Amino acid sequence: MVDDILSSYAKVRADGLAWIDEQQMIEVDRIMIEDLRIELLQMMENAGRNLARLVLDGWSPRRVAVAAGSGGNGGGGMVAAPWWFPLTRRAGSTSRPGRTRGQWSWLTRR
Image: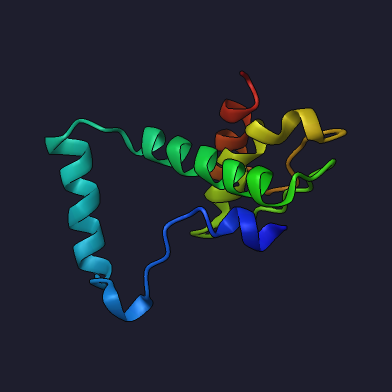
């Protein structure tokens, strides 16, 4: 079942992709924000919505638990979480005070 659903998503071989390094990704972010006027927060929201959709389409879970750290990849779980709120019993943050807690507070205000 999951394979059937995931097969509807485009498949690309890793060796067929152009890989970029950290400096190139920084430039991509700069172009998105400064030239195209797409804010970083909007890019994160789009990523979270699509992550949530992939999980909901692929597995149709009845409940979802999100564990997101304060590291470089923690934002993905935090921006996907609001899309799963109807499937969670409670939401909260156990992060230390600082940037992650502020981001979580902003996301859960909706």
